[in-house]
Amino acid sequence: MMGARAIIDKAIARKIGDQGSFAKGLDELQKANLLSQQERPIIEAAIDAGSAAMHRGHQPSVDSLNTTIDIVERVVHAEILEEKAKELAAATPKRASRATTTKAEKQDKAGR
Image 1 (tube, helix red, strand yellow):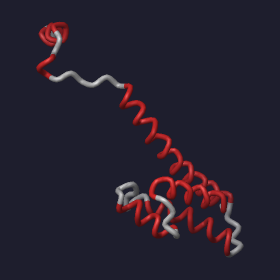
Image 2 (cartoon, helix red, strand yellow):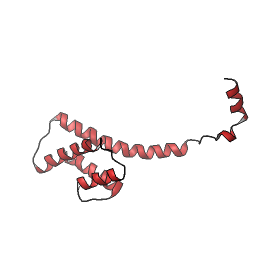
Image 3 (tube, helix red, strand yellow):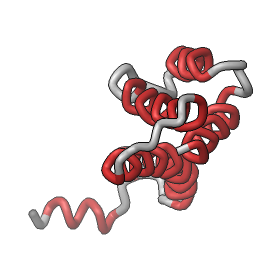
Image 4 (spheres, helix red, strand yellow):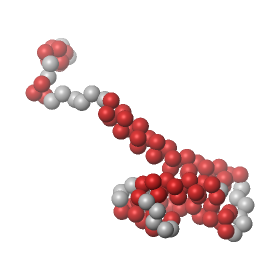
C-alpha cells in the first residue's frame, strides 16, 4: 500500500513537479487538465489507503489491496499510453487534403 502511494506521488511529480502534498498535486493536475473530476476520487482512494497503512497501521483486505494496485496500474498505464499515442501519431501518415486527391482515389470513389 505504501509503495502504491509512492508510485502515485512520483507520477504526479513527473507531470507537474513536487507540490508538497497530494492534495496540491491533484489540484495542479486538474488545473493543467491532466486529471478529470471523475478520476480524482479514484486516485484519492488509493492515496488514502496508502496513508492509512503507513500512518495508522491499517491492514487492508486482499480485495482493497487489489483495487489499489488496479488504480496504480491505471495511473502508470495512462502515462505509458500517452507516450505510445504520440509515437503512433508520429508514425501515422497524414491524411491528404481534398485538393491533392490522387487519381487512384478519384477512380476508387467513382467506382463506389
